[in-house]
Image (tube, rainbow, N blue to C red; front, side, top):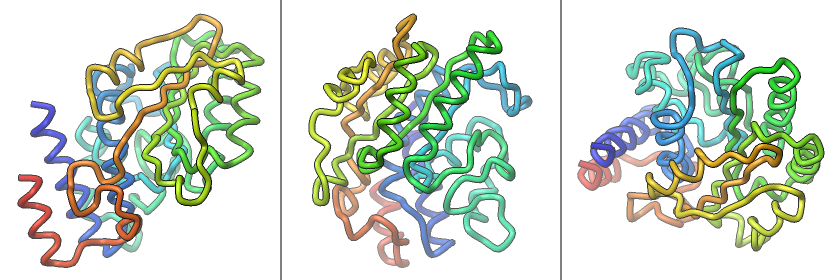
Length: 258
């Protein structure tokens, strides 16, 4: 069931990007399994009450993977799936980066890398102060880990013992050509976090990792993923980072995802 559903979501993402003439498709495919398990099996959310602060909350810090988040939110009833057809269109709510003032279910406007994670730390601290029994999840990219604000926020979260915070690292190695971050698990542990590595497309291991909670330490889940996962021509191919398929490529990729 989940395999067929994920392929459907990937087709929706592909068609949205093709229609718009732009989009970060491989980044969306890299995180799609993580987002689906998070929204389907882990987080306590309600599309009828998307702004309820007592619910679990998620911030997509690597905002350029917005198409993955939009597809999952639509499938979960936050807005109609038909809205995906308006991606990046004039006056559409669904921009290339998520806008919390426009899109139901989006908790933070992100896109400038290194900003969403510090916001998640603040939300987690605020939730604890208000004695909410919820969890705060944030997804960052491995390239985003080059930002100093990530590690400033990680240090602050450990200092305040934010056991309600979980940071997911989309470790698809897209940054290796520029600056390798090495052992991300060891780095987070050195900052006082509970940390573990998982294969980022295995739904059962994702579920086990995201339901893992430490009473006083924030948890980092380093997910080994494949950029462009599920489409051979896109997998680990930098040329696809931000581009839309032409008509022939669209036809071929849709057949692969059928």
